[in-house]
Image (cartoon, rainbow, N blue to C red; front, side, top):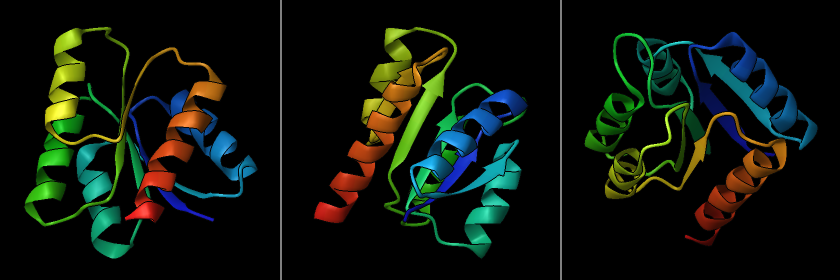
Length: 123
């Protein structure tokens, strides 16, 4: 069982991903903002972070920057409602484990999470 932090300001996405991950046997914690996510990351260890790019205030990339600057190698799957090659390229530059465009299929979310966790286990 993996511990997954879901960071998205959309309640529906939080609930959907939590439900999917919990059915797969994982533990899901949700945060509606980058500051809230940082609070969870300071208190708990997570095996994976699934994070939206575009949120009010700080972006998902701000969270990635702060995690990496603290030495965290926790894999991150990012998602965005905007299909933009520049976002995907930026995600690659940040060493993101996966990238999904909203709306995504549940099978795609399961596959991205499984792949990121598999790669982490191989390290």
